[in-house]
Amino acid sequence: MNLSAELTALIEKVKAIVGYFKRSTKAWEKLKKFQIQADKSVKRPLQSVCTRWNSLFYMLERMLEIKEEVNSALSNLDSTALSLSQIEWEICEHVCHILRPCEEVTKEISGQKYVAGSMVIPITTGLISCLENLDSRLYHPTAQCLQQDLISKLKKRFVNLDKSRIFTRAMFLDPRFKLYFEDPTVAENTKQSIIQSVTSLINKEDRKQPIAPAASEEEEQPRPSASSSTFRSIWNHYNKKMQNIQPKGTGQSRAIIEVQRYLEDKIIMPDKNTSPLNWWKEHRNIYPHLYTLAVTTLNTMATSVPCERIFSACGNLINDRRTRLGCRKVQQLMFLNQNTD
Image (cartoon, one colour):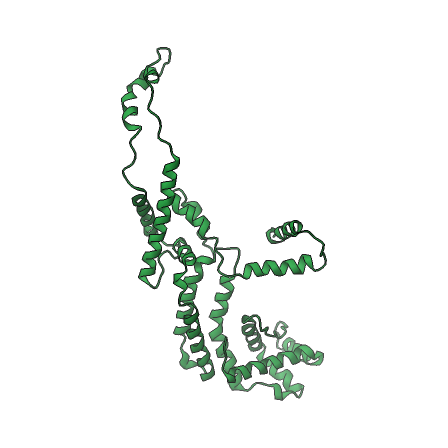
């Protein structure tokens, strides 16, 4: 994220204040004392980390939470040179307003225990719309520059997002979104791609079902000793005529019908209590072929963050002190670590 010179200087100043309270025991004791006197829970300042952009947001947010206590502590410590002016505090507040939607999206898209890949296109579209709808007239010019820069960079970076076959198909198969595409052409192309996949599944399924052979003359003859022989002989004509008759609908026509029924089904609202996987589990008999596609598509991860978490956990919990473990043992230990609540 590129920042203006003025905003960069302000952030460096905030980082210096945080560093001062972290290095000096005396300064921290003063800050803690003023928080206790204000009847607030004691909170430490948070330092930003260059490898995690949202740590900048958390640093500014925490500083705003303890703003009055920080000012009081710096005044009592004769460190007014580090103090922020009223304008600088306002800029910090405005920057937090702009970055908050970005932080929420980052946190949501980095999940690993729920469907995330299908949310990439909708949540990116929603983020850009949210930033554009912020009333920039209420912000300081420095914050306004940040807002416009974010919108411009997001549009440039994700301009080809709807051309990703993985994300578009995952979004289509998520009953929360379906055809929630900005471009009608992309929506239609995705629909046709799904129809082709369903057609392939249906044709493959039909090839696996052998046609029952015609009954022999001996089998058609009723057995006098069997009580149901008369009933079977009555239906001999039906069996001979119907056994080779197949449905007239082609695999593609049946696929179109199944996909269209799915699109006409009601959309579930995206919230914390709804899971597309549970929805598909309940509707697997209604849309059997789409269900097959869904269970193999909705496992798409939105980011590499879950993989990085596992890598970090492996280093922190296992390999640092147990360097002679074999690969298989490490895999088993990591499986237990990630799947034990």
